[in-house]
Amino acid sequence: MEVVIVPDATAGGEIIAEAVAGLLRRKPDALLGVATGSTPLPIYTALTAKVSGGEVDASRARVCQLDEYVGLPAGHPESYRSVVLRQVVEPLGLPGTSFFGPDGTAEDVQAACEEYDRALAAAGGVDLQILGIGTDGHIGFNEPCSSLRSRTRIKTLTEQTRVDNARFFDDDIDQVPHHVITQGIGTILEARHVVLLATGEGKAEAVAQTVEGPLAALVPASALQLHPHATVVVDEAAASKLKLGDYFRATYAAKPEWQGL
Ligand code: GLP
Image 1 (cartoon, rainbow, N blue to C red):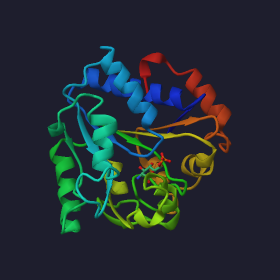
Image 2 (image 1 turned 45 degrees about the vertical axis):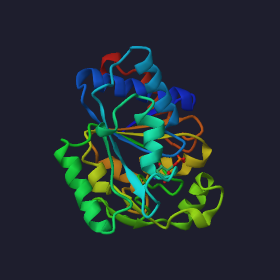
Image 3 (image 1 turned 30 degrees about the horizontal axis):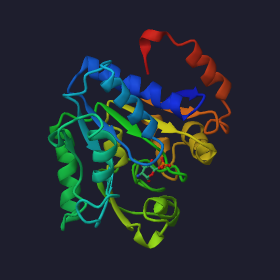
Image 4 (image 1 turned 90 degrees about the horizontal axis):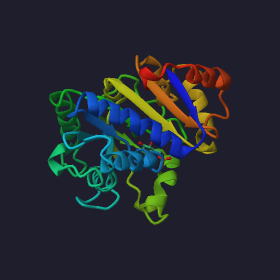
């Protein structure tokens, strides 16, 4: 796992947006897996600026979701479909047809999950998956003790995650759904490149356990230790509990520029 320590969230967004731009230059119709939450916003802002500035052509890019709430009505502003449309698909000027995700309104949720795994495979698999991390170490909505080989399926949110996400629902925890569909950890690990961004002190413990702790279902993000191309980008605050911080800084400083992320 490569750990890149950046000064702040903006720098993290820039470095990851440049990796996405590089991918699109090599593979214009790349499939980009996107995460929601506050953390990835600087990535989407930086990528949109690169597209508007003509640095990269994203017109053939394809976008897919990581997870979705179950039971929010279609078009609900906080459904992850709406969020990704608003924060990624529309700013990049992509047609709605280049974007897909699991159906959180399906009556048969299990069938919708299986269908989503099939859709990802039929699309050729995710080229670059952007991830955030929950304060409890979750990726997507794979809460602690998720199977490290799980596929896309329904999960029940922990109370902590519902508290964390209540800010998107008028600070009213009762509005936060209990159930979600999430790409499984096994599904996420099939992406060709996984890039996790974590910023702020609140993520420092989860980052330390992910990077330096044992591989454990209790910390779902630690499964990235199994991935041959996983990059963890953290700001100084999120890096503050890493024992090997100096090593990671020196390694990145000495990295040949041609290697990219
Ligand atoms: C939700 C999403 C995750 C995201 C997490 C952290 O649980 N399902 O993909 O990583 O929130 O969000 P934030 O970046 O706002 O802290």
